[in-house]
Length: 367
Image (cartoon, rainbow, N blue to C red):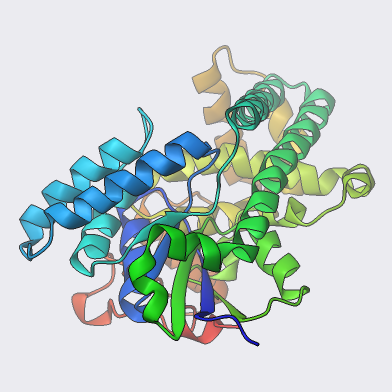
């Protein structure tokens, strides 16, 4: 006998840092009309999970009958600060959570770790970040071979961190029906529950693993609201087995290292357009990765970190092309590479009449 309600789970893959990313997530909430929205929360402990579910339920009660945009934003800001950790970047959630509250959509989380496991994950994450910073410093100081060794270590640590989290997400999907009904019993009468799972675009393994399993009463789908050209190079490593990291050549790791350096610069030039600066960064890093040793040598002639980065960028422009200075120039660069029809969801640099969702990238990528 089939378990009810059935679950229709849509993995919505995208970025989750800027206001633009929040508008994209809100687009999928309006489009898919989920019964439950599953938010990503890295390293969430079981205690934090329980606190957040209770806090969000209180927010739903307080906003019952509230329809004004300003009032919903005020409530959303409060609940975000109550649920998230200190120092969390709120830009994405400030666009998303008013829509969730207005649509009365329950919020859930698939990550639930013991306090000990969460601390271990935090240590791995910090080591990964420090190793990447050390790799960038080594490259800028002309220590090219050491930089490549360090970026290999960073990628491996990043892989360990993400795969540990993703295994928990997979297990949570298996028990999702029971867990969702436990926390939101009013959903028991539904024949099918639409569940929208919002994850960072590099977290492809859970969907791939789950598609290979027999899940009774669960239908899986996936959407990308980012063009594949803008996918983080972490995707190249996301599904690798441990032994494959040693088999990959230096060029792939050179690409990852240059991507990290260029991303820092591109983000400064288009801070409100995550997809655009990531896409531009990927394109430029691909062009320059074969010349990374030469770029490293040029950067090492600088006397300070700031001067070294300036020299590296200057050398890149000598070898390849001028770097885009702003969001509009990034659009020009990407359209030149991928065609004039290359656009983004809610791209505010486009004329107002052309800001409709890019259905070629969004709707058509349902699987």
